[in-house]
Image (tube, rainbow, N blue to C red; front, side, top):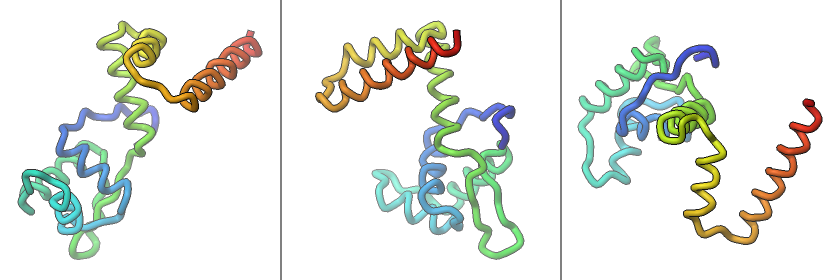
Length: 135
């Protein structure tokens, strides 16, 4: 999936299956089911996983290698692409497009270690320097 293409919304189960594939692709539906059920409070059935995987292929999020049995699935979108899309969507919906408002809220509501504060300070200094260079 190219950056220009819109990343479709994923349901919670679809997202969980995608997370499994980011760690262990390519994988068969059976393997994905086993990985999911190891940690799940409510195990899924094989047919449910196959239905979800097929939908994700139709959405363009996964690709399926149907040249072999069992089929193997692999992601067509990276974790970074999904995060970028989800964060942008969240900021647009809840913060009227202001990423700074989200960042301020996160800092206000979170316990931050000294290391985290230093990382944030460094990031802000780098961002300020970068914007000065662009002008």
